[in-house]
Image 1 (cartoon, rainbow, N blue to C red):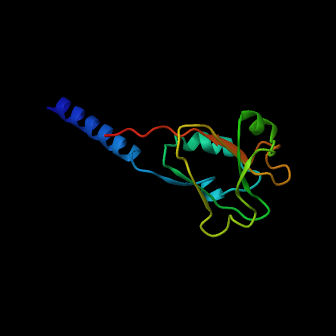
Image 2 (spheres, rainbow, N blue to C red; image 1 turned 30 degrees about the vertical axis):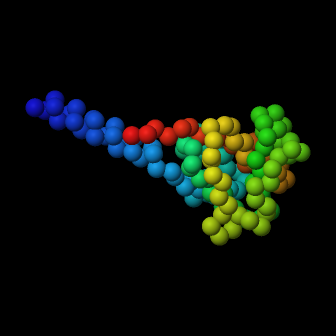
Amino acid sequence: MKMGFGYAFQAFVLVLSVAMAAEARSIVVGGSENWRPGFNYTDWALKNSPFYINDTLVFKYEAPHNVYLLPNLWSFIKCDFKDAKLIASAEDGGGDGVKVDLTATRLYYFASSDSDDCSAGMMKFFAVPLPRLQG
């Protein structure tokens, strides 16, 4: 009898976790630290992954910082903003922040171009959203 309950409980937890994975999340980048210099966002991304398709990343910050979407790994490593897309300017990060929807399974490279934020390796991270499991 105990063994049957144990299996039922495990099955319930599995179904619950699949159902939770099906819900899109809104995730504040950096959590309570927001998007700011001196914080390791690569570490934050690893601790808060996996990200899923249709999750929303919310960037909250104060000027002079910004948010760019870099086109490739080379640009990310070198902090080359030449072909990057400005997602949010220095004035956009207050209030509710700037929302970025993760709409496809691909690499998203994010960074701030202000001062040495990116080249210091701190105000940048990447995300690879996974497909959601359908229960």
